Length: 144
Length: 147
Image 1 (cartoon, each protein chain N blue to C red):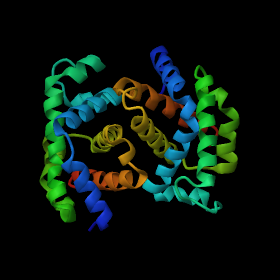
Image 2: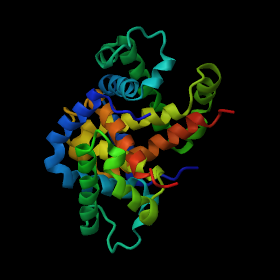
Image 3: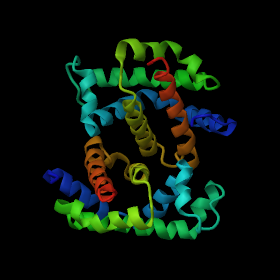
């Protein structure tokens, strides 16, 4: 389902080039939206003092998530190997139900559409969706 | 029955009252056909869907996109009874059109993204939550009569 063509990779790299300077803000916004729109995701963060959008923990974690995305962009030719450590983290320590990767991916797409409507045309959307699906698959690669 | 807060009702009515159906409908359906190309299976008689540009310029896609979006008007007018409102359309999509109901979810996601692109700062997390809740209920109702 998620073989990235050369065209996909080119589109993702170009789009990332445009948006990466706002990566922290995108991550914080996407995570905040996820917690608001899909409240069941809050169950993973019961240890945070503040789960409201824009709070310290949400901003810090959004930044962390986007650094994972940046890593995947840099390793776009072999995301599974590139994300090996993160995959082990998610499999053995975090154990996030993989359905939630789809949810966060959707929120990331919504934020990018919201902030970069002209750049986020249907073709870019398709390639980025495929990329995030590959990323999600790589993250759950070690689950079982 | 679905419970709607005053904020949710107001937000949903507001978004649709300002909606440019002739722009958003076509943008949503064409985006769905590009991002999820397997959805093209239902539009074999729509002519040229060969690439993204062709899909976006296709007049049949545009017309159908507008039709689908206006289909949401029924839910807007009957927010307290969306399930019953779509019972007939659900049967139609199941028995006549044979549409996999997962496609309704894909289309709803595309609509959310098109609206997010158009509303800018106004599309806050709370607004997104209300909008997606509305679409979730519609999607559920359209799949309800499948058996």
